[in-house]
Amino acid sequence: MKELNRKIEHLSDSVIRRMTRISMECGAINLSQGFPDFDPPKFIMDNLARVASEGPHQYSPTWGAYNYRAAVAKKVGTFMGIELDPDKNVIGTIGSTEAMMATMMAISNPGDKIVIFSPYFENYAAQSLFNSIEPIFVPLNPPAFTFDADRLEEAFKDPKTKAMLLCNPSNPSGRVFTKEELQTIADLAIKYDVIVITDEVYEHIIFEPHKHTYIASLPGMWERTICCSSLSKTYSITGWRLGYIVACEELMNRCKKIHDFLTVCAPSPLQEAIVAGLEAPMSYYKELQDHYTHMRDIFVGGLKDLGWKFTEPEGSYFMMVDISEFQKGMTDVEFCEKLAYKVGVAAVPGSSFFREDVNHLARFHFAKKDETLYEALERLSKIKDLM
Ligand SMILES: Cc1ncc(COP(=O)(O)O)c(C=O)c1O
Image 1 (spheres, rainbow, N blue to C red):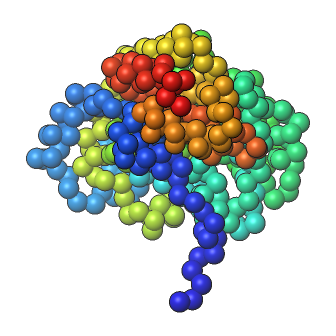
Image 2 (image 1 turned 90 degrees about the vertical axis):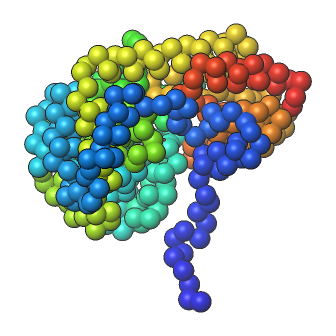
């Protein structure tokens, strides 16, 4: 056989999804891959039932059904404070995953570079590789996960730097960047003519007193930001695979060319069904935030009571926990496998998110029912006896 794609020769499978497989194998509580164990809101499921009998069941227009794009434009525009045209500024995608892939393909040429904070969501390195874009990793230093502005400027200065990929709120660190931090990034993007691609899938999972700022809304940024986001987390529908790209017309026209041939369209019955969610009143997002604050309080409070060390999450449903006290010479990967098999709780080894040599952290998520979180804490309380 002739040589197959050599770019992916050394690409390993996703560690996050591997931990889910291990978790299923040994019956552990899965706090590794981030998805809820509770249902989407009933009004959304009722709308899905209606769509099942009424349709649509065939392809939607490539850019997304008009209803869907109009609802995204209204909802996202309200939160961003920018008036969005459903025809010019929105396309519906198969999750944020496709949105990011289509965006990277749309803007890059082989050899371009992209600035990514480390730790980072593992898809980013793979997607850069597929597009022959070289990542420049800039550390977010634990435990506070803040960045050094001079180091960031060095990365922007590279003439090959085409874009920065910004995950805010951040997976896995749980950071929500302040307006001042975002202004620093925006100033550099403008100074060095760099595009910012955002991954804002946790935009509505923010813990007081932190606030989410859309970098696209800062002066001079709308023209150079491609916003990728998802409905997976906001409406608890990770399996529906719905997301979107929002951008100015010029950048969007590029993304459209890729999306058209990459996927044809996102699932049309699900686009129709989620319009009910996108049209939900503002109180929906407040209740979502309250619900996640409640889950965060249970899990963070429980770990505090157990005396574990960790960085308090400011947003998203992830947190980085310091496991050094329990490692006894194990790598973080060995620790997480043992934790799943012996203690019955699955987490993700921190090293899979870092480009730097960091081996003393594990990522846990807390998008779970109260009883699941209490059971996980009960199991974790026995760690010293079981490992
Ligand atoms: C930071 C981040 N981006 C993107 C995704 C994937 O989103 P989607 O389900 O919309 O593809 C995830 C899922 O966990 C995520 O954590």
